[in-house]
Amino acid sequence: MTRLLLPNENIHTHIQSKVGGGHQSVVEDVINAVKSNAVLVVGMRQNPVCKSVSKLLNSSNIQFEYLEYGSYFKDWKPRLAIKMWSGWPTFPMVFVNGCLVGGNSEVSKLIESGEMQTLLQ
Image (tube, rainbow, N blue to C red; front, top):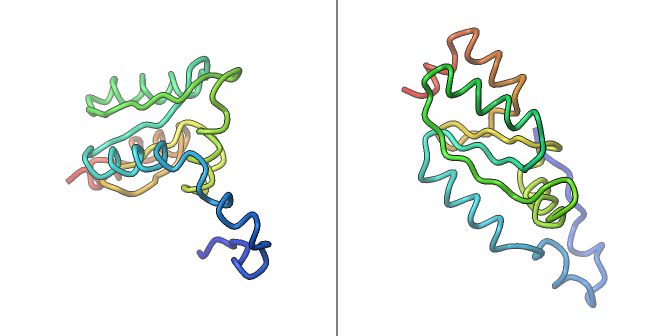
């Protein structure tokens, strides 16, 4: 599936430098963490689903790195930049060996089906 993006020719030249460049360092941090960890969870404080996926991975003895970006009341702009980069609309975002596999419900299904172990090999 190809995600649709507004072409540069449809963005006024005066704002082109602002489009897509916001919080680039945060996105680069996530990209580097995706590359250097077999399992990466990108989440946020106060989100019960982020806590659930962490508990699920822990109970399945799957080691993971956790990056946390703000809460419901703070740091929404960096989280938006991560969402725009990944295309995934919610947190948590779980990456396995560089591949975005989804959030809590998707990870739960992968573990139940045994596919998670296949992805980790």
